[in-house]
Length: 101
Image (cartoon, rainbow, N blue to C red):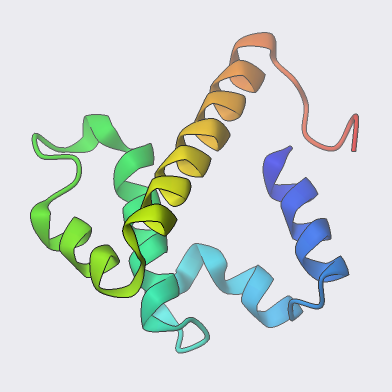
């Protein structure tokens, strides 16, 4: 549900379809800036915390910190956590994507 809702919001804000469609393959495209790549990598790490013993390696955090201020990083971490919470709630209650948006 979040994917559909946010894709629609991005389109309304003028984001290109190419970037919206490519976000899942951000490593394989040149459509994202270094700062966006750092945020996307941090997002993946914070979302997939069970995949490795060190979920957010220093290298990932340090790369994000090169592009984002402390306040921006705090906001980014909070947004990642919030979206992960919504996703987990939707899984628990079996909310089907696009039924309410």
